[in-house]
Length: 125
Image (cartoon, rainbow, N blue to C red):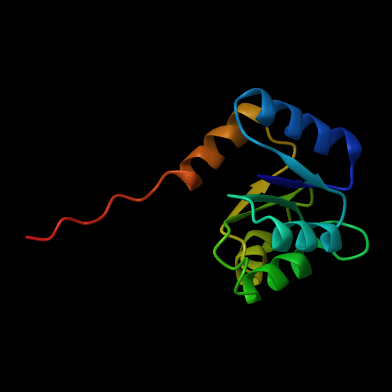
């Protein structure tokens, strides 16, 4: 799992909690770092803050979803700026899920586990 947030406290809180509950966690501080890390060692899921320096989370998500190496990695967009249309814009950029911050770590864990749960194949008649 890759946790991307430029705010040290938020990044560390989510990373430490998720590691505590059993996830292997890596971190990035901006969109460029996130894209480079995802391309180098693709994580199972990316938690992407949208307001990032250097390259914002919107652009980083677009680049990840356009790259053959990373396009199938689920991206959960996180934003403290919950404006009308942000969730839809995040999905248009390629995010698979949108979460408003602040978010309780337990709630975030539950959403991550739901996203990572393999979908059951439909049984054929």
